[in-house]
Amino acid sequence: MERKTGVADRFFGISQSHSSVKTEILAGITTFITIAYILILNPQILSDPYVIMGDPAMAGKIANGVFIGTCIGAFIGTALCALYARVPFAQAPGMGLNAFFAYTVVLGMGYTYGQALVIVFISGIFFIVITAIGLREAIIRSIPDAVKTAITPGIGLFITIIGLKNAGIIISNPATLVSLVDFSKWRSGADMVLINGALVALIGLIIMGILHARRVKGSILLGIVAATLIGIPLGITQLSNLDMNLGVKFRDFAEVSFLKMDFAGLFAGTNFVETLFTVTMLVISFSLVNMFDSIGTLLGAARQSGMIDKNGEVIRMKQALMSDAVSTLAGAMVGTSTVTTVVESSAGIAEGGRTGLTSLVTAVMFLGAILFAPIVSIVPAAATAPALIFVGILMLGNIRDVDFSDMSNALPAFCTIVFMPFTYSIANGVAFGLITYCLMNIMTGKRREVRALTFMISVVFVVRYAFMTLG
Image (cartoon, rainbow, N blue to C red; front, side, top):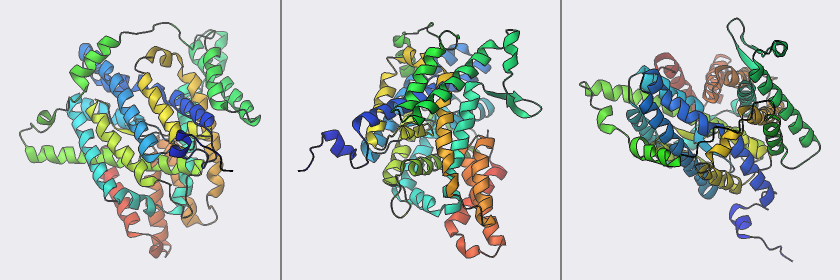
């Protein structure tokens, strides 16, 4: 007798994906909680240039507007992943891209917030076009196996270092670049907040490990909740300073963010040709980073979740890429920097999320965050950081698929893996993997193994590093 299935099961193919509604919901909640810090950090970053330039009033308006825009942009992108692509990925403003937006384009080059949004908008149109004609799919297919297999462990190390940094376990050091937080300072009472945050994260990581080893469903989410509660007596989880003044946020959103792209101002320079060239270079720079960040995340998360078909390609790849492209366009319209597929999606996938229902839950929570922002802000970075570290453990296991026996594969794979965490960029890891792959194979008599498109992409990256500012 055929088992009856619900509407959600049939639409998302939950049973077919060997998942369950409960698992998908838990996965969606986990993804949201892991990525919720972006709702707080993105407004701070995009408004910071105006703080530095001495205009706190405008900075406050932009921060309020960007908060609403971040929630809406992330909702649109993640809902597209859920209902159109039907994949368990979340979308939100990319952290590296928002820093480029704020500190290079606005603060460094003198463009306004509204003019920078135009550049993001144009890059969104560009993405839609190249996705529609299949160019982005062709680019993914041109990535050699040596680099593809290295992307997942590379992302694992990348999100691990993000987690260690967010937890305060590793700190900057002018002599050694990074170092371990000095736990011995508890005796003098110095840096107790930093030390307590690191302790909360380590305890949360151990809880997740124990629960996962005992096969407890929702181990990552339960670890986040436990770390949040442990952080209360240690002064890490803040229950005060709840700001429920949504009216002001919506007013500022309407005034400075929603459909406030300044096309006229962007192209108002006296030298139109020079302005056009500069804008084109910025669009290309935004696009290259966004494209390879999202491609890297997509490939890494798909391999982790088993969303690979018999030909080794990502299932529903074109739909996922189009969702990413449309969300970039939509994000600019609601006043935020580039919205892209985020690496924190891996947290929900690690919890068992396999379908678009995971993304739908995350999308609804992004929208609900507008009303429940104070509750979202209660969860400290020290509680979400162990989730990133734990997922890094799971993703690093895929390093077993990398072929280190042949140096023409080993060196590109190694560069892909190490450049992601050490340059703080997925795109850089993919880029240096491709460049070294082409050089190694051409110089060792295997030039026929290098596809023309792979070589062309590598050349584009070389040109970018040589002539375009990285921010």
